[in-house]
Amino acid sequence: MKKLIFTIVLSASALFYAQAQRYAYVDTEYILKNLDSYQTAQKELDRVSKQWQNEIEQRYDAIDRLYKAYQAEKVLLTEEMRKEREDEIIKKEEEAKALQRQRFGVDGDLFQRRQELVQPIQEEVFQAIKKVADGGGFAVIFDKANQSNILYADPRYDKSDRVLSRLGVSSSGRKDGGSDDDTDEIREEEQRQPTEPARSPDLAPERK
Image (cartoon, rainbow, N blue to C red; front, side, top):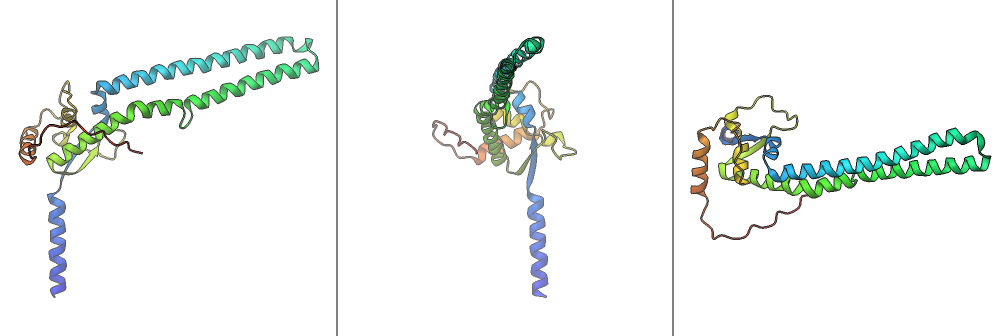
């Protein structure tokens, strides 16, 4: 009997604890679009991507011209000359493919450049989300962006603009229509947090 009562109390406590948790969500795609640093990084990635793509296309155009010239002159060439021309075309084609893999392959130059430019911004956003979660008492914050499994989300629980506020950005228009509880949550957060002397921010650790 005592064991049964203990089980019931434990189950009730677990249910109460689960119900007491606070949940919210953000849209990281929306947040990033409102960050000038992210837009600048994207423009730089587009620039280098286009530059490298043009470089590769020029190589393939040169190979195409060599091949057409070879086809036109093939009947006039000796066997040795044909072999030499064919080897030259094959070599240049292999070099072009290698360059393409180097620029756009897995862990290639574009990937490394994206990591260099975008990862610090993503880490900054993550830290801002964590501060919003800690300050607002949220147990879980979901991400609505990139085909998430959230089928419906009440705009009142969208804390994307609060994350932007943490990042020092004023969004052009609130996604949640300016929910009234945000102001109260910010006041509660300020009351909970002790006053600390100003200090320089620590560098965010790089996430592998």
